[in-house]
Image (cartoon, rainbow, N blue to C red; front, side, top):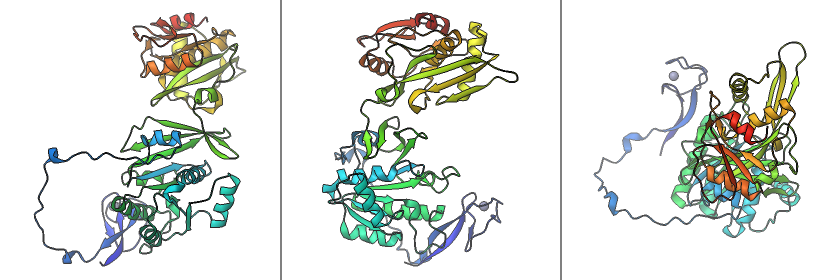
Length: 445
Ligand SMILES: [Zn+2]
């Protein structure tokens, strides 16, 4: 098979034998990406008719998933790793992707995992394993960056699972571009995908999310692989969240929660305890929200501070909550409830560093704001759930039963919820409200 490398414009498909900064055809800048092209197309065998099969004649073969025993990981995968699947683990450098992969290999040591490292030397890898207290037995390691050699090693040694750390360090010998460039990342991933599909060996590809966004990282691989997960962590907090972005074999709503310790990542089975401070008596300006994440709910504490601003424009500062959403809620509180935040600095913080993206937390954010404004605490052991609309009406949100169950499990006695909710047997008193003003009253504000 004869091949040559060509540079193809990603915008218009223009082909060039050398790299160009600007596409001569469409004028796009930096759009030419290196690809490998076959030059012996004419030697192709003549077309042949192939017998198609009837759809209803196909029987579904039961898929035996590979369970890692790390439940927070397996759940995000959709119940374990599917044979022959290719999974990209994306995230900022230093968030703990390599640690997670090493721990995963240790759990799968009976399957003869192969850990390919292009980031660290073998010596560094051994040191890290020892520091984390990871059992090294059974894990094969390879410090290699040429994808052809990695592929040959996989074919020869037939490991049960392969980790490539990271896909950005691999390169194909036939390509001129540097490791980490879009052309190289795509080419190397394609080689590994082929092996995975042919042999059934699952592959986990670590992909760094670069400062320029997702350039040459997980994003360019999304359409080629089966699963893309994102490993997230907030600044100085110890917790990490594994979130599915694409999953051909499961839901993308699931999250896995871990805590980073000196002995590596520890699974967090009860995330609410992590994000909920000790609330024997609620402080003024705080409220608990029950947010939904996939098949489970998390309780998080919303904290607010409202203080008279000095001269000039008053400030609005949020941590873990959308700034525009806060402005909208403040507008509703001012226009519909007649409260005055105009001459105040407003701070909203989600305790524990969690990022709330769920509109179901709206009522709790409003309760925290009003509590802070009036210096009043909400009732003990009461949680609030609901989206707030522009007229101040309370709106239903998804997964109400899961949220209520989690609140009941953590000892909450009542929940202020949007009216017309009919859920039985959740073990918590429901206090329905149609409007935000009513909800705040039911919370004791
Ligand atoms: Zn072009």
